[in-house]
Image 1 (cartoon, rainbow, N blue to C red):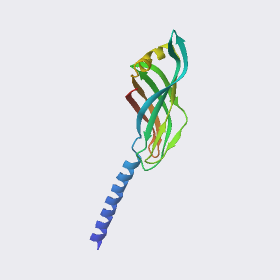
Image 2: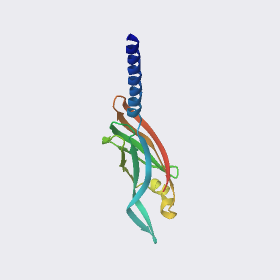
Image 3: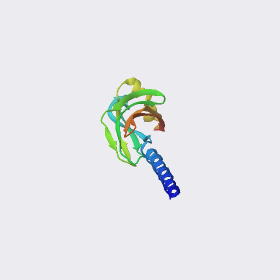
Image 4: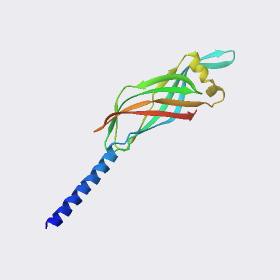
Length: 160
């Protein structure tokens, strides 16, 4: 009888260990962050001869964040820098925390205002040819329950 009880205890320990591994694996994954696209809005223009040139442009980053875990996590903020054709055109941050529900995707659209001539000059290809490369680099800060705060570094490039 003690033999059966010992086998049952060993089986129970194995089941609990496997369940613990499964739970840990499903609550400890970092979120997947990707830049779905970069759009722009022309806020102000000026005419030079017969050509209209933007003097103030707002870039709109479409950032998708997926939580692969079985529990919600909190995105506590983000810092990012945007490059157009390898020229830094601006930076920004997300300060307001938000909750990312379990196994769900949220899209945030932070803005970067461009008004300096250097930043706008790097963006000329978009307006003249309709083509340019945009790269976003930064860090997204998340708070994962039982693990704590975690920084996630991102660097992605997209064609405009």
